[in-house]
Length: 158
Image (cartoon, rainbow, N blue to C red; front, side, top):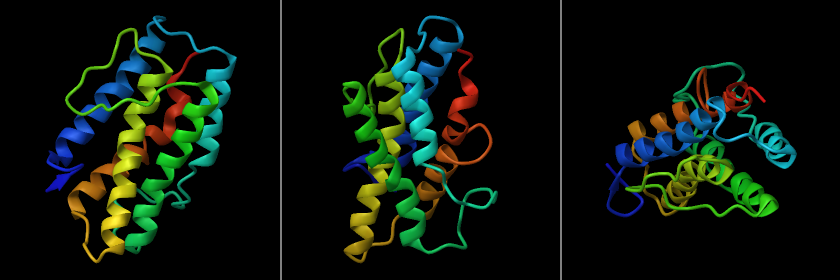
């Protein structure tokens, strides 16, 4: 099960979680205090990426591949816009450690890695190649459901 060229889906999600949780942890411990722009961008990301899953838990195996992959890929476009708005640079996360204290760039980069993978899967699907079910289900769990990125706003105390 390969994604992102020769990188395993487990490596992608592990790296994404590391970057994402580094930012959340540093915020909760006071090492990163979001400013007004960061708080608004976070709220906008949550609003723009509402998964429209009707409260069902991932994986969304009863839905078509285009719907499932589109839901994941949607995050990539939203995060590119957010990064441009705040002038943060999205960085590759696979095989790299986030800078500490982690902040908005690390948070966005971690989530973006999963959304970008959704875009790649969508291209593969359009070329007739079915993506790996387990990797897609793991990406869905990363982005939606209790304790996931879908709950992003709940993790900040500022």
